[in-house]
Amino acid sequence: MEKLQFQLIGDPEVAPAMARYMKNRFKFLGLKATERKEQSKPLLRSSSKVDVPTLHAWITELYNRDYREYQYVAIDLATKNIKKWQLADLKVFRKFVTQKSWWDSVDSWRTLFGKYIQLHPDEKVRVFEQFYQSTNIWEWRVAINLQLMEKENTDTDMLTKAILADSETDEFFIQKAIGWSLRQYSKTNPEWVKQFLEAHKLGNLAVREAQKYL
Image (cartoon, rainbow, N blue to C red; front, side, top):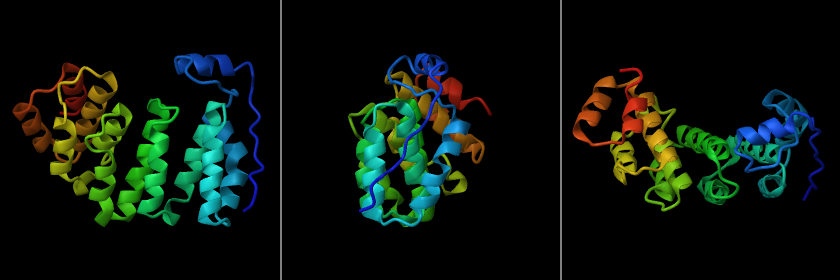
């Protein structure tokens, strides 16, 4: 297995502001997204030539490093190789949703899962069931927002089940997720979203978010 030889070089003067933006939950090297992607470009390019076990090892090593930018690179690496993954790989990546969790990493993993179901629509339900009814708020957020990119392929029964698992929760990140999912789907099917809002009691935050384009 090829050993991972990769280090980011950040700006210590930028790092404190980045940490504050994330409520000081993580240490930062001080790399904005554009610079991080530029520095990681050779790694992502070379990843196309390594096997799946090596990729898993690299992603895990990067995700376990102390600085937040490495978690971003790990997710970028997983997303770059989306066509290599099977459902078993997604079950491995699921554990990262609940590790070093905050909206930035969770929503990036959700994007990966969303791209996977676009490539494998027949496996959408199985991906959804990994997260549906989880007691962890971050996994629940993934279940609600899994179909953000599905547009006319949105499974409204699935969306309804995810939202109504506890539609009146006062958990901020879940209320935002509910509103986000409905707002996004309203671009495709505004009538369905209007009817959904009329039929179900949701939190004020979720309703506000959902009605943005209505």
